[in-house]
Amino acid sequence: MILIEFVFAAICTLGFGILFNIPRKQLAYASVTGALGWILYSELIGRFDSPVMAAFAGAMAVGSISEILARKRKMPATVFIIPGLIPLVPGYGLYYSMLKIIEADYTAATEIGVETILVAISISSAVIVTTSIGRKFKRNKAQSSE
Image 1 (cartoon, helix red, strand yellow):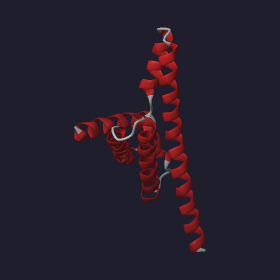
Image 2: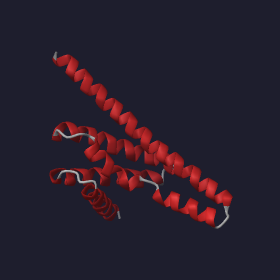
Image 3: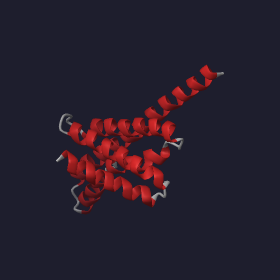
C-alpha cells in the first residue's frame, strides 16, 4: 500500500513539476521529495486525531529535503518545495466545504472549512520554519568561512 501511495504521489508531483516548468534534471528529485512528504503524512494521519499535525510533519519533511537538495543541486529550494507540497494541499477539504455550502449544511461546511484552513496554515508554517532554518545554516556557513 505504501509503495502504491509513493508511486502515485511521485507521479502527481512530477506532473506539477512539468506544469511549473522546473528543470528536467530536477524533476526526479522533486518527485521523490513530494512522495516522501506524502508518505510521512499518510503514516501520521492515523496516529494523530487531526490531519493538521500530519500535514505539518509532511510539509516539514518536504521543506527539509528541499533545503538539502537546494544546497546539493545548486538550485533554489522553491524548485523542490512547490511541486513537493502539491500532494499535501487540502483540495478535497475546499471541495467538500463548498459542496456543503451549496447543500445548505452550514455546520458541516464550517467544520470542514476550518479544518482545511488549519491544514493550509500548518503547511505554510512548516515551509516558513524549514526555510528559516535553512537560511540560518547558510548564514552561519558564510560567516564561518570569512
